Length: 517
Image 1: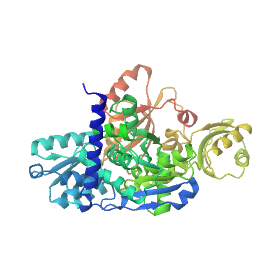
Image 2: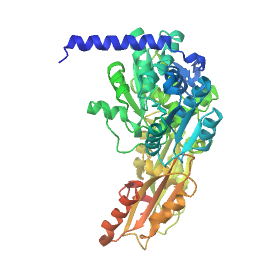
Image 3: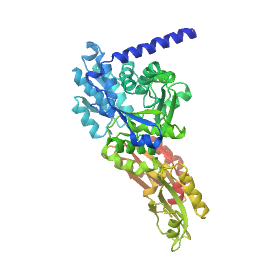
Image 4: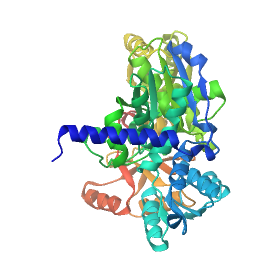
C-alpha cells in the first residue's frame, strides 16, 4: 500500500518527466510554431483581451501533427518495419500520414466508409494508404486492431498515449513564450490528448494560469468521467463537432486532466456556430466545429462570470471544414449569438392579425415566418425574430407578447424545432393522428444510405411524416412519423432495435405538438 508521500513523489516525478519531454520534443522537424492572434473586435465586445492560438496554420491544418510526429519519431526500427496503422475519420489520420511520410514509414489509415471524400483524399495526398471499413469509427477501430495483429503493424492511438500527449503539449510551450501573462486558457476536449499535454506543462511553469477544458454539450465524455471518478462510456455522442465526438475519455489523459485542469464547461451547437462566424470575421479562417469549440467556451465563461480586463486564450485546434456544413452553420450562428429567437405564437385567424402581431414587435425584424391556413379560429405561426444580442432581450420580447395577450412557446433551445420542424410547418395529418408516433434517427451517410434507411423502416409500418437534410456530415438525421396501432407497439420497437439505428422518440416534443400533430 503506497503512502500519500509516495503517491505525491510519483506524481512529481511524472510531471517533471512530461515537462522534460515536451521541452525536448522534435515536433518542429515537420510542425510549425503557430501564431497567437489578438482578436481586437471580440476583445472590445467582451471587455477582455482575447487571443487565438492558430493550430489551423499547421501543414495539416490541425494540432494532431505534433502528437503523431512525436510518437513516430520515438519508435524503434522493429516497430516501424511493417508500418504503422490507426483508425481515424479526421485530423489524426492526416497528421499521422504526413508524419509517417516525413520519417519514411508506411502508414495505413482505417477510415469509416462515411468519411467525407476531402479527408480521404488528404490522407492519400500525404502518402497514407486508406482502407475504408464499416459505417462508424468503432467498426474502423476494431478493423485497425485486427489488421495490426495480422500484419505486425504498430497501432497508433489518437490520444491515449504518453508520446501523443507530449507532442500536443508543445502547443503550451509556444503559448507560454508568446503570452506569459495569460490568465485563463480554454482548451477543446475530445479524447483529452491536447488538454492533458497542455495542462501538465502550464501548471508547472505558470501555476497562476487557469486551465478550462471545453466540451460539446452532446459529447461531454470528460464531465461524465469526472462525475463517475473514472472514464465511462457515453450512451450516445453528438456528431456536429466530429473532431471531439469521442464516447469515452482516455485513461491516461483522464489521470492528467483530473490533476491539472481547473474546470470543465460545455457549449451548444449554436454557440459553436457563432464562434465559427467570429473567427471568420476576425481572421478569414473557417474553423471546423471542434476547432471553434474553445472560443465558444471562452465567450460563454466570460459572459457568465462577467470577466473584465483579463487575458483569455482559446485554441483554434483545426480548420478541416467540410464545405457543405457551412449552410447549416450560417443558419444557426445567430441563435448562438443570442441574435434570434424562434417562437410559436398563436394569433387570431382573421384579416389584419399578422399586421397587428408585427406592430407588437416594436420594429424588431422578422427573420422567418411559417404559416398555413387550416380554417380554425386561431393559427399557430412559427416565427423567427432578430434580437440585439443581449441575454435579457429574449425574455423581454416574450413578456411583451404575453402582455399583448398572445400565447407564446419559446423554441429557441428546442433542437427538434430548429433542425426539422421549421422546414415542415404547414401540414397536419388527420387520418392517422391518433396512432402517429414521432422518432428522430441518426444513420451513417454514404451513397444509398437514405434509400437503405427507407427500405428498412417502411416495409412493415406506414410512414406518416418524414424530414431529412444532408449537411455534409458523416451521419444523416431524420425525423419520421409512423402509424402505430396499440397492438403493434411491441412489434414496432422490436423492429427498431433489430435495425441498429440510433433513435429517440419525440412524440411529446412541444414543437411537434404545436405544428405537426
